[in-house]
Length: 574
Image 1 (cartoon, rainbow, N blue to C red):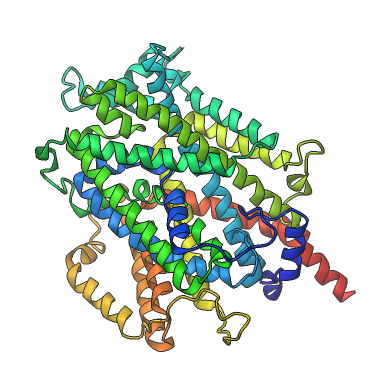
Image 2 (image 1 turned 90 degrees about the vertical axis):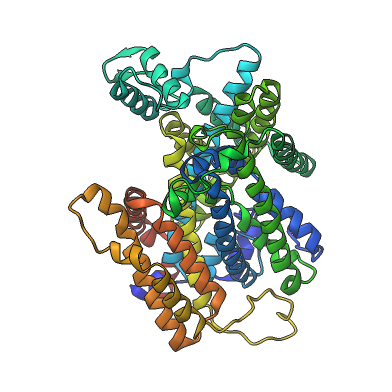
């Protein structure tokens, strides 16, 4: 059985699916031409990175880290750079475009492919919930500009309203320490229909936009290249506009202290910051279309990450300079800060742009998830219904409807922080697998057929990784030793548990690097992604592990036996 867990899907089968129109790639052209230059790759990278994250989650990240959240953008960008290079190596080994699921199936076998595919389903679904929640907040603000007032209890999730009400109730008459956002949420609870703890509080606009986008995907609506380029221009224009205009309203006193909650507080914003970079790996799937992938692909990735990081840092500094960081725990931070300083019309313009741009992002990802369902279904890992094609619209109709339900229902009741935490931990785990997988790829001889293929520059980690580990342990001696100090408060201590996993993994990788002369970039990518995962807390790890365990249960009870490759193996034995 262990051999069958790692049975691989052949390139011929992947090519056959692609020619039949059943690829899970975002690239539609059957023949990939080497036409992309460094400039093209850089612009594609910027387009992929600047998305819903900067419009939504940067507020929560700044709330935790203060102005110092700008440092976290640099840390996250470096992590993303390592992972993107690994993804490019991973992708370029397979001469077709596709998702990480497809690459894993061909390179590492079925079990790893299932884990990555199952993980991608969570990334797409939870990520779309976050986008829908953010869209709802900007849409509500936009309606305010037309004097259309939606009841507060119809614009937020149940738990946020309930928690806010309890917080205000505990504060009594002194509300000076309660933010306006929390008071607004408490008001939503008080005005919501119902009694006791049974109140009707739900994010109806989030539900509405998911229904609309799902319908458009169902009938086969796609963005044209021109519309996509227009969305990119709009998103970048809004970000630059916020930086330039907001600069004149910055009060430097708001930057003091720069790290109000210390390094630990800054790292609490990791999910919000990482969410702003989700999509950066899309550029790595274009390896087969680069004029010179070995030279141009890393340059395009690095340039785009640097440009986006500079823009993100400037946005973070402007936001935390315009208002106190404590006020930024909102879902529409870019519009909120201008509204807060009296520039209400600018706030509405930003809301219009955000409504259009985030809807565009939602459309792209709502199209992407059914492709993963469909691809896994065609491989026999999910029921055939998921790969059923609509006779009229030629779309995976059942997978699209399921995607709509999976996204829309939780969007009614989940809050942005919980959603981005789950999205980030799932995505980071996928990148840990990709980086680790690159280390397991067999070496290949260079010949005329693969000479231009992208390869990660090899740097021997034999002495570098152990030395870095020793330096880190010495520099952070006290925080590391404090992990072993249990004060008796389990609720506080449990969030330290993921750090033990990271320390163990770091020691193992240091030993393997010394003994096996491993490539440095994949090792650093794996460890940096794993470290960011540890910062997401015990609760998110439990939720993620439950999701992973559920996936493995489905695989061993259904997918393993129904797999097309299993049927092929059985037929061969007969």
